[in-house]
Figure 1: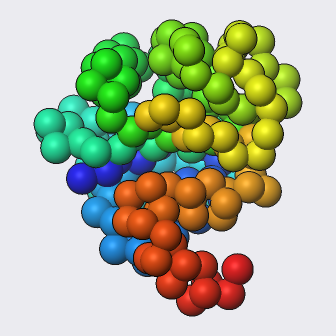
Figure 2: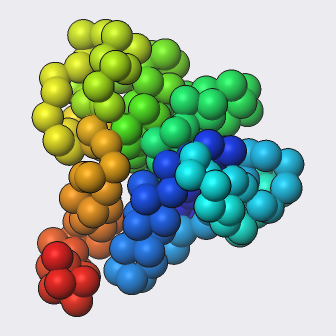
Figure 3: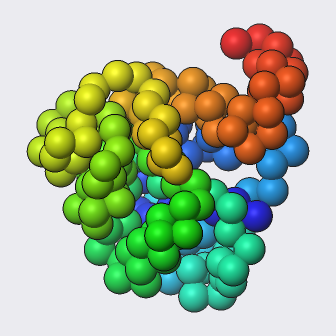
Length: 175
Protein backbone atom coordinates (compact mmCIF):
# COMPACT_ATOMS: atom_id res chain seq x y z
CA UNK A 1 0.00 0.00 0.00
CA UNK A 2 1.08 3.57 -0.67
CA UNK A 3 -0.02 6.64 1.23
CA UNK A 4 -0.42 10.31 0.28
CA UNK A 5 -0.75 12.78 3.17
CA UNK A 6 -3.06 15.80 3.09
CA UNK A 7 -3.09 18.77 5.42
CA UNK A 8 -4.99 22.02 5.03
CA UNK A 9 -3.21 24.20 2.50
CA UNK A 10 -2.02 21.32 0.28
CA UNK A 11 -1.38 22.10 -3.39
CA UNK A 12 -4.41 20.65 -5.15
CA UNK A 13 -2.80 20.04 -8.54
CA UNK A 14 0.08 18.17 -6.93
CA UNK A 15 -2.12 15.96 -4.78
CA UNK A 16 -5.04 15.28 -7.11
CA UNK A 17 -2.98 14.74 -10.28
CA UNK A 18 -0.63 12.39 -8.43
CA UNK A 19 -3.57 10.47 -6.94
CA UNK A 20 -5.32 10.24 -10.31
CA UNK A 21 -2.31 9.06 -12.31
CA UNK A 22 -1.19 6.54 -9.69
CA UNK A 23 -4.66 5.06 -9.46
CA UNK A 24 -4.91 4.89 -13.28
CA UNK A 25 -1.74 2.80 -13.11
CA UNK A 26 -3.41 0.44 -10.64
CA UNK A 27 -1.30 1.57 -7.69
CA UNK A 28 -2.95 0.95 -4.32
CA UNK A 29 -2.99 4.44 -2.83
CA UNK A 30 -4.74 5.66 0.29
CA UNK A 31 -5.09 9.36 1.03
CA UNK A 32 -4.56 10.30 4.65
CA UNK A 33 -5.99 13.38 6.36
CA UNK A 34 -3.83 15.08 8.93
CA UNK A 35 -6.64 17.47 9.95
CA UNK A 36 -8.68 15.25 12.29
CA UNK A 37 -11.53 15.14 9.75
CA UNK A 38 -11.72 13.46 6.36
CA UNK A 39 -12.40 16.82 4.71
CA UNK A 40 -9.20 18.67 3.79
CA UNK A 41 -9.12 22.16 2.25
CA UNK A 42 -6.42 22.91 -0.29
CA UNK A 43 -4.44 26.09 -0.85
CA UNK A 44 -6.90 27.29 -3.50
CA UNK A 45 -10.07 26.51 -1.55
CA UNK A 46 -10.73 23.14 -3.17
CA UNK A 47 -11.85 20.65 -0.55
CA UNK A 48 -11.21 16.94 -0.95
CA UNK A 49 -12.33 13.97 1.08
CA UNK A 50 -9.44 11.79 2.25
CA UNK A 51 -9.77 8.03 2.51
CA UNK A 52 -8.66 7.81 6.15
CA UNK A 53 -7.57 9.82 9.14
CA UNK A 54 -3.94 9.45 10.20
CA UNK A 55 -5.09 8.17 13.59
CA UNK A 56 -7.10 5.37 11.94
CA UNK A 57 -4.40 4.14 9.57
CA UNK A 58 -1.97 1.26 9.98
CA UNK A 59 1.17 1.96 7.98
CA UNK A 60 2.84 -1.42 8.51
CA UNK A 61 2.19 -2.26 4.84
CA UNK A 62 3.53 1.05 3.51
CA UNK A 63 5.62 0.80 0.36
CA UNK A 64 5.78 4.53 -0.51
CA UNK A 65 4.88 7.68 1.41
CA UNK A 66 3.98 10.74 -0.70
CA UNK A 67 3.96 14.39 0.41
CA UNK A 68 2.31 16.89 -1.93
CA UNK A 69 3.35 20.53 -1.95
CA UNK A 70 1.91 23.01 0.45
CA UNK A 71 3.05 20.23 2.72
CA UNK A 72 5.44 22.16 4.95
CA UNK A 73 2.78 21.93 7.65
CA UNK A 74 3.13 18.16 7.45
CA UNK A 75 6.40 18.65 9.29
CA UNK A 76 4.40 19.84 12.32
CA UNK A 77 2.89 16.38 12.81
CA UNK A 78 5.14 14.48 15.19
CA UNK A 79 3.69 11.05 14.38
CA UNK A 80 4.08 11.59 10.64
CA UNK A 81 7.66 12.75 11.14
CA UNK A 82 8.39 9.58 13.11
CA UNK A 83 6.80 7.49 10.36
CA UNK A 84 8.89 9.23 7.69
CA UNK A 85 12.12 8.68 9.65
CA UNK A 86 11.32 5.00 10.23
CA UNK A 87 10.38 4.53 6.56
CA UNK A 88 13.68 6.10 5.53
CA UNK A 89 15.70 3.95 7.96
CA UNK A 90 14.12 0.90 6.29
CA UNK A 91 15.13 2.26 2.84
CA UNK A 92 11.50 2.43 1.74
CA UNK A 93 10.36 4.95 -0.86
CA UNK A 94 9.47 8.53 0.05
CA UNK A 95 8.31 11.10 -2.49
CA UNK A 96 7.80 14.84 -2.04
CA UNK A 97 7.07 17.72 -4.40
CA UNK A 98 7.29 21.52 -4.27
CA UNK A 99 7.79 22.75 -0.68
CA UNK A 100 7.34 19.29 0.89
CA UNK A 101 10.99 18.23 0.37
CA UNK A 102 11.78 20.85 3.04
CA UNK A 103 10.11 18.53 5.57
CA UNK A 104 12.45 15.72 4.53
CA UNK A 105 15.45 18.03 4.75
CA UNK A 106 14.58 19.18 8.25
CA UNK A 107 14.18 15.56 9.37
CA UNK A 108 17.62 14.58 8.05
CA UNK A 109 16.09 12.19 5.51
CA UNK A 110 17.96 13.85 2.63
CA UNK A 111 21.38 13.39 4.20
CA UNK A 112 23.68 11.81 1.62
CA UNK A 113 21.05 12.21 -1.10
CA UNK A 114 20.25 14.69 -3.82
CA UNK A 115 16.94 16.55 -4.03
CA UNK A 116 15.08 19.47 -5.51
CA UNK A 117 12.27 21.72 -4.29
CA UNK A 118 10.24 24.83 -4.99
CA UNK A 119 12.36 28.01 -5.18
CA UNK A 120 12.80 29.57 -1.75
CA UNK A 121 12.99 26.27 0.15
CA UNK A 122 16.52 25.30 -0.91
CA UNK A 123 18.08 26.10 2.48
CA UNK A 124 15.97 23.39 4.17
CA UNK A 125 17.56 20.83 1.84
CA UNK A 126 21.10 21.94 2.67
CA UNK A 127 23.85 20.19 0.71
CA UNK A 128 21.26 17.83 -0.78
CA UNK A 129 19.85 20.56 -3.00
CA UNK A 130 20.92 20.05 -6.63
CA UNK A 131 18.11 21.79 -8.47
CA UNK A 132 16.57 19.89 -11.33
CA UNK A 133 12.97 19.15 -12.18
CA UNK A 134 12.45 15.62 -10.80
CA UNK A 135 15.29 14.08 -8.83
CA UNK A 136 15.55 10.45 -7.77
CA UNK A 137 18.23 9.67 -5.21
CA UNK A 138 18.38 6.36 -3.37
CA UNK A 139 14.92 5.89 -1.80
CA UNK A 140 13.71 9.48 -2.27
CA UNK A 141 12.03 11.15 -5.24
CA UNK A 142 11.54 14.92 -5.21
CA UNK A 143 10.13 17.39 -7.73
CA UNK A 144 10.35 21.14 -8.10
CA UNK A 145 6.74 22.30 -8.30
CA UNK A 146 3.17 22.20 -9.61
CA UNK A 147 4.02 22.30 -13.32
CA UNK A 148 6.00 19.08 -12.89
CA UNK A 149 3.30 17.09 -11.14
CA UNK A 150 2.67 14.74 -14.07
CA UNK A 151 6.41 14.10 -14.48
CA UNK A 152 6.61 13.43 -10.74
CA UNK A 153 3.67 11.02 -10.84
CA UNK A 154 5.02 9.18 -13.89
CA UNK A 155 8.36 8.76 -12.10
CA UNK A 156 6.50 7.23 -9.13
CA UNK A 157 4.52 4.94 -11.44
CA UNK A 158 7.69 3.77 -13.16
CA UNK A 159 9.31 3.07 -9.79
CA UNK A 160 6.29 1.19 -8.43
CA UNK A 161 4.99 -0.55 -11.58
CA UNK A 162 7.75 -0.46 -14.18
CA UNK A 163 8.22 1.47 -17.39
CA UNK A 164 5.66 -0.55 -19.38
CA UNK A 165 2.80 0.46 -17.08
CA UNK A 166 4.10 4.04 -16.92
CA UNK A 167 4.13 4.16 -20.75
CA UNK A 168 0.55 2.82 -20.90
CA UNK A 169 -0.73 5.47 -18.51
CA UNK A 170 1.37 8.11 -20.26
CA UNK A 171 -0.24 7.19 -23.61
CA UNK A 172 -3.78 6.90 -22.20
CA UNK A 173 -3.44 10.33 -20.56
CA UNK A 174 -2.24 11.77 -23.88
CA UNK A 175 0.68 13.35 -22.09
